[in-house]
Image 1: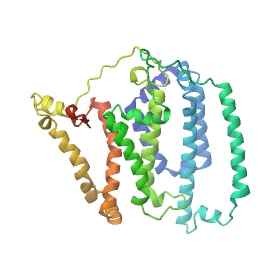
Image 2 (image 1 turned 90 degrees about the horizontal axis):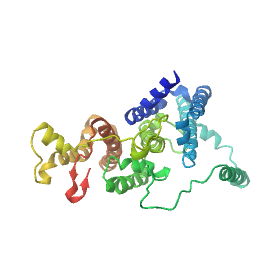
Image 3 (image 1 turned 30 degrees about the vertical axis):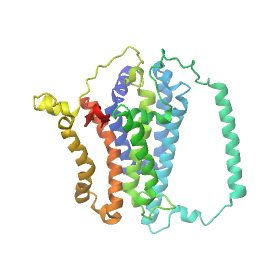
Image 4 (image 1 turned 120 degrees about the vertical axis):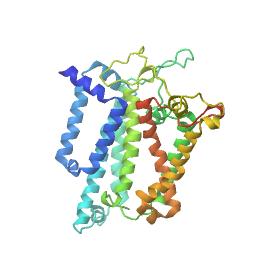
Length: 359
C-alpha cells in the first residue's frame, strides 16, 4: 500500500502533472474562500507538515531534502504557504467588510498609531537577536555545503545554480540562452518597475483586497507561485543527474538516460506535414514560425482587446494596455513552451542558428 502511494506521488510529480496541479491549486485558493479560516488552514498546514515528516522516513526523499543547500528551501515552502494564507485571509476579510458597508481593517487599525521609537525598534531588535541565535545554531548543527575546489575535469552532476536562480536555469531548458538568461530576466525587472505606471487603479492602495483587484492578484499569484516558486521546487527536488526528472521517492540514478528527439516547428511543417526537405534559405525555412511569433506579439493583443480585455483597454488607454498585454503574453509564453516540450518534445518555434536567433 505504501509503495503504491509513493508510486502515485512519483507519477504525479511528472512536470506536466506537477505544474498543472499547482495551477489548479492556485485557482482553488482564489476561488474557495473557506480555506483561509483558521481551522481549515490549520488542518491543511499541519497535514502538509505531517506528510513532509513522514516522507523523510523514505531514504531517497531524505537524501535530497536533508542536503545543506536544500534545507532553507524546504523551510521556505512552509513560509510561502503561511504568508500567502495571511495575505488572502486579510484580503477576503476586507472584501466582506466592504460589502457590508464597513471600512477595511487597515483603516480602523490606523487610528491607533504607534511610534517607530520605541515600539518598532524594540521589535526589530528582538527579532535580530532571535535570528542571530538561529543562524548560529544552524551553522553549528548543519555542515556547510563547501565542496572540493573547482575541477574542469570533474563537474557536479547535476550542476545547479543557487536556489534563487533555479527558475532562470529551468527556463534555459525551453529557450535559447540569450532569451532565458538576458531577455526574460530584463522583462521581469522592467515589468515589475512598470507596474505602478500601468496599474493606476487606486483601489487596494493601503489595504488588502481581492474582489477589487481580482485580475491583478490572479496574474501575480500565477506568476509568483506557479512560474517562480514551483520552478524553484522543480529544479531543487525533482531535477536530478543529467537534468532528468525524478519523483521525490525515486533514487537519483546517475546512469539514467532518457533519449529525447527535440523537433522544431519548421521540421514539423516541412518534413512531417508536407513531406519535403528543409529549404536551403533560412528565411523560407522559418517563415511559418516567424509569422506565428509576430501574430502572437502584434496581432493577439488586438484580438484580446476585442474579445476578452476590452474593459482594460477602455480603462487604461492604448499605450498602457499594449504594454500590459505584451508583458502578459511574454509571461504566458513560458508555460506554453513548457507544455509543448513535455508533450511533443517541441523545441523552437523559430530556429535560426545561422544568426544565433532561436525562439
